[in-house]
Length: 244
Length: 249
Image 1 (cartoon, rainbow over the protein chains, first blue to last red):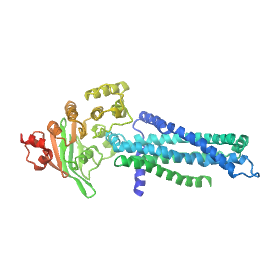
Image 2 (tube, rainbow over the protein chains, first blue to last red):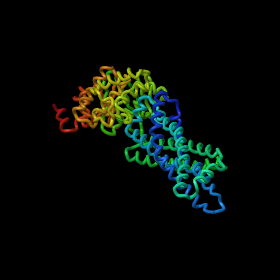
Image 3 (cartoon, chains in turn purple, blue):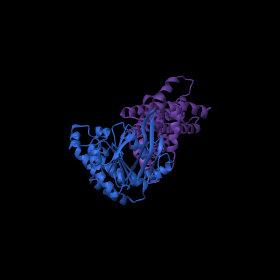
Image 4 (cartoon, one colour):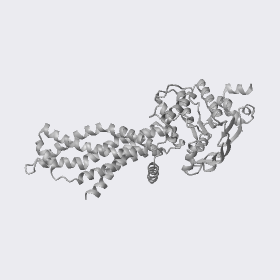
């Protein structure tokens, strides 16, 4: 475990170097924006709209007390979506999608000697392959999470319109009640940390693959499992540090 | 010229290379031959810097390479071309992008100049008009030739080939061997070829280094290999019925 941690730190030292050619880096960055970020928009939006709707219905179901104001449902749904659902649950979903994608891509490159080929050409493979992935995810995943928050809240509104748990007007009043901008800051801090964990851990696991196709498959699974555990663990730490 | 001196490499308790000293000359095809597991691939990987030796040195034209800092290695690596066993072409890139890759990374040439060089290298390996093909669309022989084109695109001083004709039919193998020999002579490159193919040994072995049980067991060329009495080398090279007949003729 300690050796793995040491290898991870050494790899990150190799990753965070000045790229050999800035033009090549920019091209790779744009490629990764599309490859990792843009292709994730669909799944994020679909999940967000449904979970936003379900969260609203669940809150309404559990606060079925005439003494509680209806706007509390909108308020609670917003807080759930902004503080936990969008940054954490969507990051877990992205750990599944991006983690397996990154680990299998790098693992396949390793076992087919493409990484060796880069190294013997005089290219720093860690910097060339992993740095653009990390930077693109650090920049793009927060954008996805903002989309997720907006669409999740919209999903809650749609649930109000189509199920009538509360009136859409009261839902909107609840959304605007007791709003603290720090909630969004908290969500963004968590998102950036989770984005780094997903990309760096998955890259490390893929980069270190030895063997053949079976090991690439195992690495892909490990990347998802380890990234997910890291996200949950850091979620607890960050929540404790930033909200108390 | 590449020199390896007193190279020893262990994996755990197993000694894979034991005090190997050899010289690989410029403008010649220098072969490393040996059975599977004899240590020839490890020696090649030490030469290209994928492994570090436990002791001994590797020098490229008197410039130290093994156990030196990465920044010194990087300068020498830019002068290397490597043909991996499976080609190791970048599968996210087209043929043109693969061959252009070293030029993109290490030169300031314009796109037109790079394209001209790419087309020249592809022509040199008898491949024309395949610039836009994906690597998955290539046959085994074409992959090897594209890999050779990529290896020579940045005009290397040193060319390393790891079993260049493994998995290829005899005709394509012959073609690849001829190509490597021609390129070596034409550009005066120091070429090291790791092989266990008897045809390559007889055709290209301007110097032959036979590795056996981790030691440099025999050194010669494709003429002396036919007359040697070295039992282990004869057992290795002339093991099949066909090659036994060749030896007796």
